[in-house]
Image 1 (cartoon, one colour):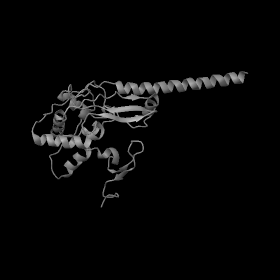
Image 2 (cartoon, one colour; image 1 turned 120 degrees about the vertical axis):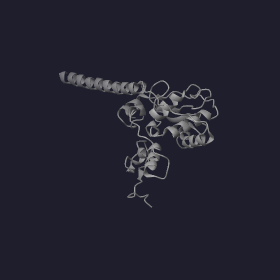
Image 3 (cartoon, helix red, strand yellow; image 1 turned 135 degrees about the vertical axis):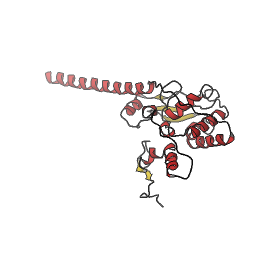
Image 4 (cartoon, helix red, strand yellow; image 1 turned 45 degrees about the vertical axis):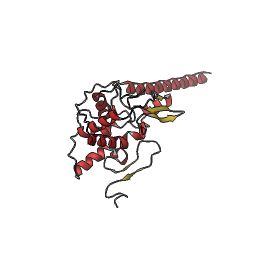
Length: 241
């Protein structure tokens, strides 16, 4: 009987330890999602000319429409019965959108620093790439975002299941709270537009190529679950020709 009693104590202790660890990981994830960041947005000129709006539209078509939909009205982005769901926000000035209340500084903080209107980090949106955008390109993008037609679409606040929070704490999804990783006070200067190595590097970073292909662009496994191995883009890789 004493043996069974000690076995019960050990098993009970292990179960209690597991519960504490699980609750701790969930708390850690919740704490990271709710953390507030106090970052002063840089002053960026927002143009109004057609050429700048065209540049902004180009950036939006490449980076914004894939998640926020072609009309930038947002909608369902990710959903899984065991993990929860994430909606891409409505970026327009319509019902449920953020453009009606966003100031220019709010746009700069969100795009360049990964910080939402309420001071918490954006989730999934790779602001660590857009941090490289020059003031000219960023200003053009913001100008275009402010010019798009309003879309009335109310999106849901993200809801992650306990399992998703545990997996996030374990690093299974990588780090998708980009305000945590951006060096907010060390953004490199953008080079002049031209057919140069420096401008090519700028485009590579601002378009997020290293995120999938690796820091040296020699191929890597993206953090996105199920994503194929990203090609080696260097002269020594399979795309050299």
